[in-house]
Length: 92
Image (cartoon, rainbow, N blue to C red; front, side, top):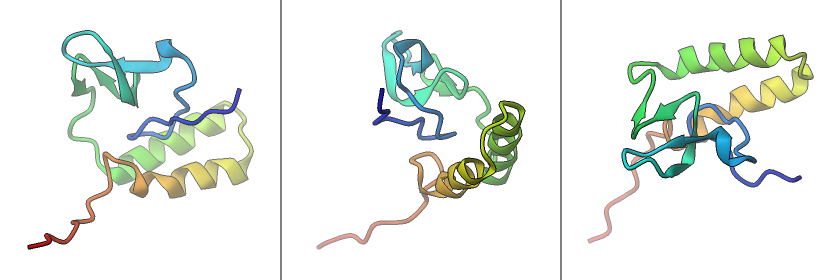
């Protein structure tokens, strides 16, 4: 199965409903996984991008995932919704 959706915090594939986090009302989050987000809130709200990079790298290495894929996942983190702090220009 080709995954089209990834957690917008850690980049984990969201290819099964049970991998999706939950909103306050109990519905599945379309943006975040169950390891990052439950009941409408991040489980580690104070986590920094650098801490997430370390966590993702460590977990993927424990799973014996190819180092090129680990690097790609870590490199993609700053572009995800949780970490992307790029301000869009205001159009008047």
